[in-house]
Length: 231
Image 1 (spheres, rainbow, N blue to C red):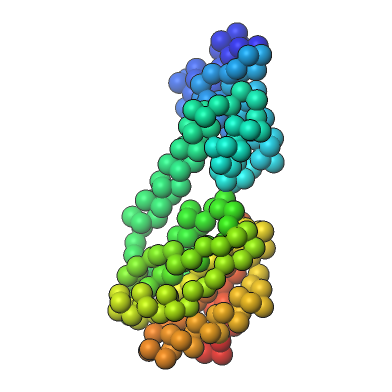
Image 2 (spheres, rainbow, N blue to C red):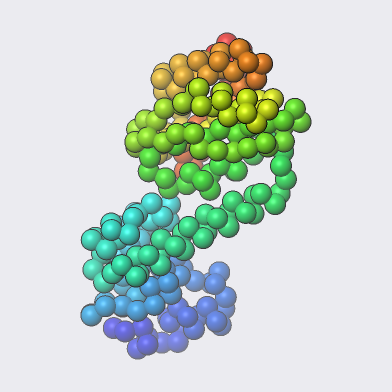
């Protein structure tokens, strides 16, 4: 059945005009992005198939590539897949812009997680980021220093030390993600943190924290009392 053959209460665009975007389900919002169906399936059917493929989670859907959407879902061509991917990228940039307007200070591990989650939400490979701080815990820089596979990446200790010295950082926070969903650090994560802390101390820079994030939670070395001095 075509969307135009549905009752006005079931047509996503009309429902949005009448009641606002917040009244629509995820399926209906995606259907608006898709605009039209294909053959015997309408845009709502295609949107429903996309969400089913992603386990009903928008974070999983956001990680799909254009080719994955095209090859897995009937009715999605390149244009539709690009539109969906572009919508998620806009949402990610909106989240980053919203945070940047809230203030430049790092207050605790939660603020680190909130700042970095939009960068790493739905990312399927491990990435390592460095955040440089001034003496008042204001942010001097925020930069991705390495990325790897779905199960590992390198901390790239020497690059972190180099950019920290170049930007005159007083302290550094390291953040990396675990796409598996378990943010608990591995033995290798702990060993790399010890090495980085030692290298930074040798040039009078403090490793303030190392935060491991997943889509839904995070682990902070500082919060768990894994002393940076001991590392």
